[in-house]
Figure (cartoon, rainbow, N blue to C red):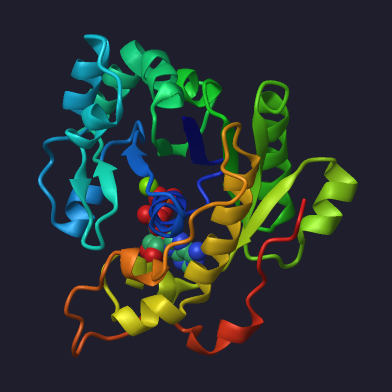
Length: 277
Ligand SMILES: Nc1ncnc2c1ncn2[C@@H]1O[C@H](COP(=O)(O)OP(=O)(O)O)[C@@H](O)[C@H]1O
Ligand SMILES: [Mg+2]
């Protein structure tokens, strides 16, 4: 159906959090694919086993697998139910797998009956994930709203936009927001992800469900997910909205007594959502 890639241009953090958060609020249940060449972090983050995952999925794809049943048999559910194909255990294994089968995996993912959201980590000219990224229907480049990051993110957007829908996802919008970036750099900004450390921790299972529900990060991702879904080739013009989308979020582990590291709990109402592009 569709392959949506989340990458970072300059190592601005948040690719994994953004991918999982988008998956959690996507209207029709997608699958998250952890294909960061640096190796898996999701199993350790959520206390999941390393198998099944990318290694078994790649084996199946090599042997001609397709279809929803196939991808789901290599996925594991996050606490809220979102299926995730966890990455390879080591950088060596991840790099080797993607170098050999990345393009094939991308072709397979783009043709899958489910929407696949791929966390490819930090992009580079030598990233073994490039073959997969080139097969995507949407390529998002996560950047901070600082000029030095935006400039490099914009360069990457230009590399992909002839063949696919590519644009920046800003983490925060100060000092530079979507309008000025579109005007001055001529690249699309697909959304603004709230800079919300507390929400990010809650998405990683380290906050209460209440925090997660109210997180500016989650709200911003919902706006972005809906916008991205409308740009997909086979998007449903009248998506079937879930009655209780919040229940699909990864639930927090028991965080009673844990210190809350986020400092921006009061910023909820001031968070900027995505602008229409
Ligand atoms: N939107 C955000 N706002 C604030 N902090 C965030 C955000 N997204 C992620 N983080 C934090 O940044 C760190 C790295 O996040 P992660 O998603 O693992 O980044 P990456 O995959 O790019 O390495 C984590 O501590 C996470 O909580
Ligand atoms: Mg990551």
